[in-house]
Length: 259
Image (tube, rainbow, N blue to C red):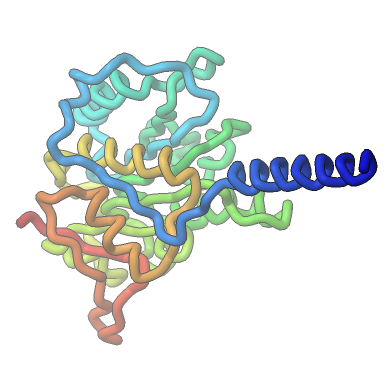
């Protein structure tokens, strides 16, 4: 009788801990569902930032690199996320302005400028020519470790080679009225008007939130258009980029136009 009671006690204990372990197993959603609200408070009304070990690198390139414009955008983002000053108490955003912050005006220096920072994401705005090679170098660092680059890369309004930036970024966003980033456009890239998108700080805020919430590159599937639509906001219509010569739609390249 005593042995029977011991066996029953052991059985119920095992069942209890098995159920507890099963309940503690994390549930992984099949689809990423993130809501980005368009009616949230302005950045300058949000709580002050906190120090962050992770960093999101934001590169300001052609069309978005004028000093006063960059300072205006960063002033808004700094109040919510803080800027990385190289110290342990630094904020989330690590800004780089091309060509000012790049030795010899070489965008290929991007990996060296990032250094040993633990990136949570990379956002490139107005990417200059050969930016895709610089991003590929960052990816090579992880390829040597037999793992894919673990953080997302978003490219907005690039002046780089279309196919190259498509291959190295999670997604690419262009303005429809600018020819959707045609690789045949050899116009003077430095003559691109500044502040092409008046609410870039809001788009950046949404992009940063997406990176922090997903903690990984966005999946390159049919749902990508919906994610990009949330990031750019309800003021824009988003459609897939169509190659003028082949008529083929891009998987991860999109064009936007104001509604």
